Length: 180
Image (tube, rainbow, N blue to C red; front, side):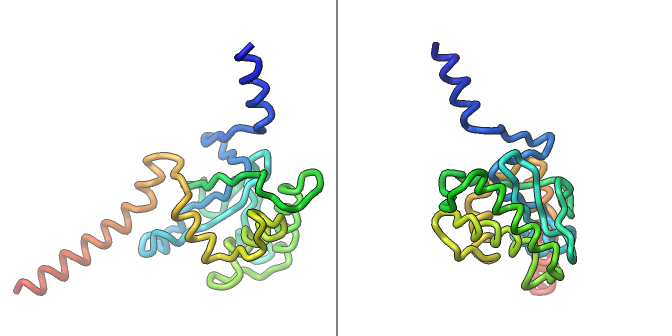
């Protein structure tokens, strides 16, 4: 009887996360941007997933990709609670992700102001996630840093090793020059 209840609870919870297939239902996903993340490891590329785990990301001017993130597979994910969506209606989560994606198909990409983080923020604002319509790229960056989980040890290394090597070179050169 307990097995039947556990199976029913798992089915009600929806699709499961599958890192191998890059399926992250109800998640914000993040991946490093080569060179940029090497110097600033908290800056990267972001997407938002549908309830079935399909990744949508604003990948460039007038283009929102589906299941093919601009800079590779996700290195981090931040699992969100679909019960915190304050917009009513069937498939409110998926509708908000779809509407944000359709809107961003008409946007010029700008690295500093209107980018992948803005696309994710619009989706969260449209669904009024956590009863808020004040999601923005700075808040998303901070929340992903605090609440995001790496998909593997390799993803952690891929994100932080280049920065740590760069920092080591800078410290070595600085100490060498100051010890003379």
